[in-house]
Amino acid sequence: MAARIKKGDKVVVTSGRDRGRTGEVVEMRPSEGRVVVRGVNMVKRHQRQSAQQEGGIISKEAAIHISNVAFADPKDGKPTRVGFKFIGEGRDRKKVRFAKRSGVEIDG
Image (cartoon, rainbow, N blue to C red; front, side, top):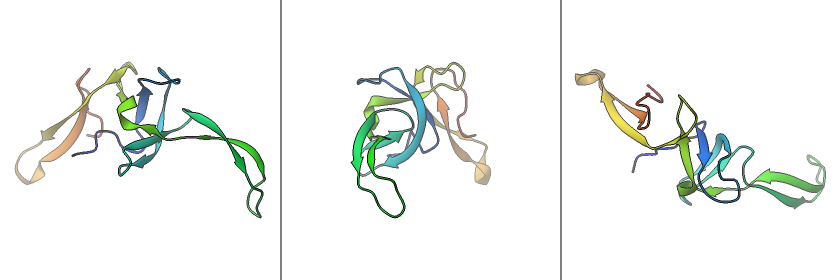
């Protein structure tokens, strides 16, 4: 199945304790079906001190299931579904994603 959400996309969280918050996809984990979104689903972790890092309790983003996020529409920032369409003809044909809510091309 084609990836409807990719790294760098702006997404809206649709369910869970962070519902309604938006952020950028930092990491994709397709084998797990999860994404990491900047500033969303923050958890506290105990970090052991090492030569590179300071120890203590740190806050970091935890992964969210991909079904709990939706692409943010480029026009108004509301959640939208993503569709695919082909642009051009013959050898110049290119597959692009578009927002179903507004029809705006995402990466075209």
